[in-house]
Amino acid sequence: PRPRMSERCKCCEREVGKEIHIECAVCRGVRLCLQCFSSGVELESHLRDHDYRIQKPGQQVIFDPAWSKDEETALLDAIDKYGPGNWKEIAGEVGNKEPAAVEEHYMRFYVDPLEPIPLPGALAVDTKPVPFIQPNLAPSIAQLPADLPADFAGHRPRRDEYEHEFCQDAELPIRDMVFYDDDPPFARELKLSMIEIYNRRLDRRMQRHHLARTLGLQDPGRRQQARENSEFETFRLGVRPFAQLSSPEEHQKLLENFLQVQQLQQRVRRLQDYRANGITSLADGAAFDSARAARERERAGRGRGR
Image 1 (cartoon, rainbow, N blue to C red):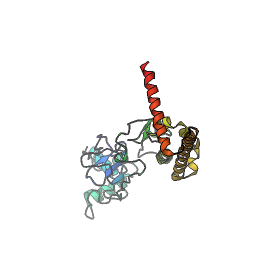
Image 2 (cartoon, rainbow, N blue to C red; image 1 turned 135 degrees about the vertical axis):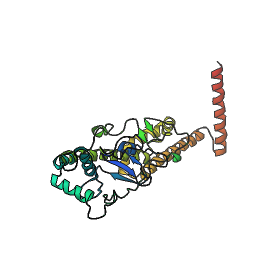
Image 3 (cartoon, helix red, strand yellow; image 1 turned 180 degrees about the vertical axis):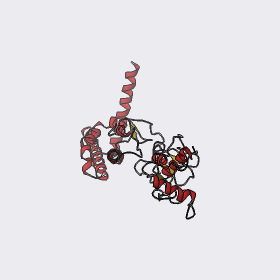
Image 4 (cartoon, rainbow, N blue to C red; image 1 turned 120 degrees about the vertical axis):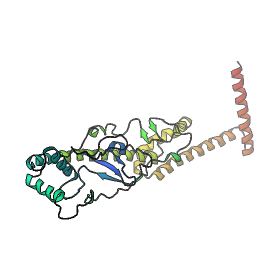
């Protein structure tokens, strides 16, 4: 049989000619399977943010809009196999074509064309490049603190992932899904519905990521803050369910006001302590605090020496 042009994934070398795949609109000859494309692979000059085209199997037209590229290839392979004239057998190899229609197409475009034969791909279905859109949800690595831990409380901030995600098993129903050319309409609709459900779950997952970032729930310094100020942490956890009823700015303002109230209460208690010890000025109060701190250090030193 006549050799065919190989259509393989540039990364994993998987044959993609008979399935939906991605063609880079910037790099010539770069095709990727859906798995490699979704993982964001980059090869030599090809970058994952390049514009791309979604290529569907058999959508390219070479000569006649009623004949796909795959049907043209099957026609030539069948003629190599059975020889010209055996149109019934050839039509059986092409599929969905009558022998008379197969003979007419072959004679018109291959034997005695009435007009110049177009170059391959000249009648290709118009597939405009799809622009790459960078999601503006996760902060870039450059915006993260240099001392940020790689993993804390099940969250990986540099990858914006959690150890246990919302709808953890959302990928399982479509993990082994494959679209075939001969899929009946109801099967194709079912597969598309499953993909739509999967995309909705991903949207809800990303909404939770965004909400956690907006409200500062992923702050690695919050654990230290909780240890130092248990009263504030108790209040923060208590009002967290009400965060969905206000804007992030309003919720943050509420927490800041609580901290301010705490500071004012501590200052009032300190002034009351000064008055109980007969101190009437802030300067005397500072001296009193220094002397008390010195006595506590001395007492702690004597305790360690025993």
